[in-house]
Image (cartoon, rainbow over all chains, first blue to last red; front, side):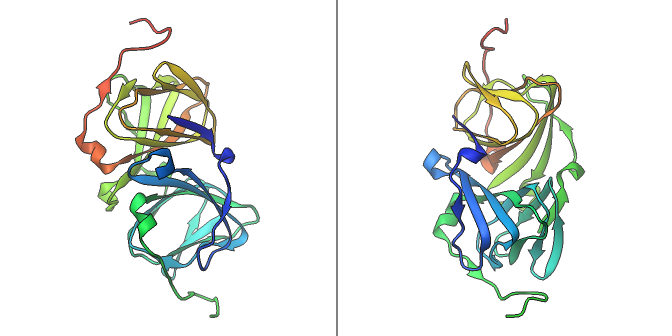
Length: 129
Length: 129
């Protein structure tokens, strides 16, 4: 059994193309012996966002703190603490912090995600390319 | 994409043998098309607990609110909001609310858990049988 405060897990910059002001803690993963899926906690600073992309694996998300939106293609959904999001494989998505405080959420992926590539999507809505 | 407040998901009694004052919301599961694992939110009322048991699949847990302990066999670990727990397959465990408010936590399992049985373990520590 592993028991730890989330804050004790190393906070790393997200270096994926298209990420801005975005950090991650890998809370539970294959290094812990987890055989099927990984629990990550993302922290997106004010003005930041995750990549607008798609990939052949799912996300299961729970919002812990902050205010934001998740883009379903070009459609926007509001995020507040307690919001649950399921993103099926291959769907274009992006998380954006729309508040003044950090947006924190859990985002779980199958271990197979480590062997699959993401495809960065063109920007949507009012953002000029 | 599914986006919902956790509170909008049906709260059901946990009917597993050995559970007491314990409810669950299945936030994301196979009914949503989730191909690999399920996100559940447990709510254990004051004085309540989950079964003391083991099963051939893992748990990935994140504590959202309340105070409690998780038993690793007979060993007790404190739980507060933000505590992360990984329980490997086959390890005897139990979650207990030790506070006055509900203990709420996410507990994720692989979809294969639906086809596998849990084994209730004898009580431990100071609890008489």
